[in-house]
Length: 239
Picture 1 (cartoon, rainbow, N blue to C red):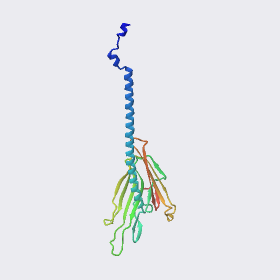
Picture 2 (picture 1 turned 60 degrees about the vertical axis):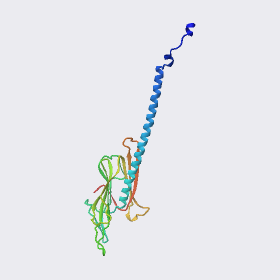
Picture 3 (picture 1 turned 135 degrees about the vertical axis):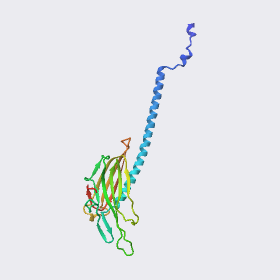
Picture 4 (picture 1 turned 120 degrees about the horizontal axis):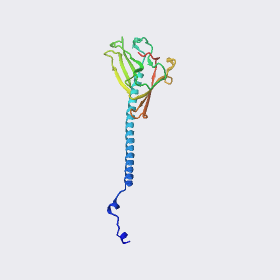
């Protein structure tokens, strides 16, 4: 008994840490690191997707607004002056059509890697001819085209005829409407008789674009435009 009373655990035994305690501590630390990493990754992804969505939405809206404004100026391909009008030779043998669309409508494709023209139209502004005290100025003829190229949706405005002295000249233009596109849809609602066009009865061209995040494929942005027009259409046969 005296021997037992004199026994005391050593200092190293009192302060020692068992293997199980080390493993438990390491597991808890690993879980904390894992949770912290997931939270950081989630926050980073949310920030990246949010920035991409805002930037892409702005690009789509700006591009579609430009396209809508261009379509609002569209006319038949005609040379117009105060003396009247005459057809403008577009070079494709069809002078009466205005809006060239895909072969079938509604049109929808996810094959955005191919190079193809989707929409083509003309913009013709009158010149001046034979007015007393006025210098003759020829008419301005422009064309607009919406097409896929290099995986991007582009809009190109070309000058078909433009006198050097035409006032407020509109220049040639090429602009990327959208990038990282995953789907394009085009449809139109047309009035059978153009003489029946009114504020409530209009031809409407609808273009819808969907862009997909290059890394996070479930993150998409979709924007659409509705543009009115007052001239005939032609399926396919783009100039």
